[in-house]
Amino acid sequence: MAQLLASKDRELYYHTWERENSTHYYEIDFLISEGSKISAIEVKSSGLGKHDSLCEFAKKYSKHIKNCYVFSQKDYKQEKGIQFMPMYLAPFL
Image: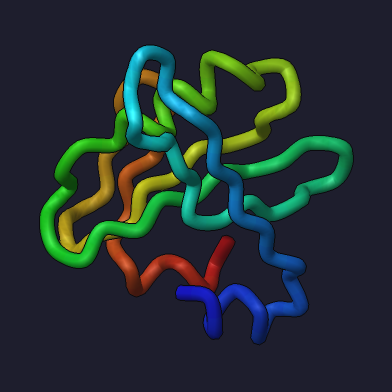
């Protein structure tokens, strides 16, 4: 995914922050700029799995976010402001 996004002349960023009352961290795989807003991208190797980090990020920075994406091997759907997309659609971001 990183190579694909970089080949489209996108600057890639990664974000991580501490979970409250935990030794674990939230992390966003990729952040890309889209005008004055950002889009957050999570990549899952097979199924949709959990995407708690993306949900928390969306809550924390809602006024700065244009889109939230989860890329996986599954079909397209949209749910609670998150677009779930198959990997083959990534070049069309």
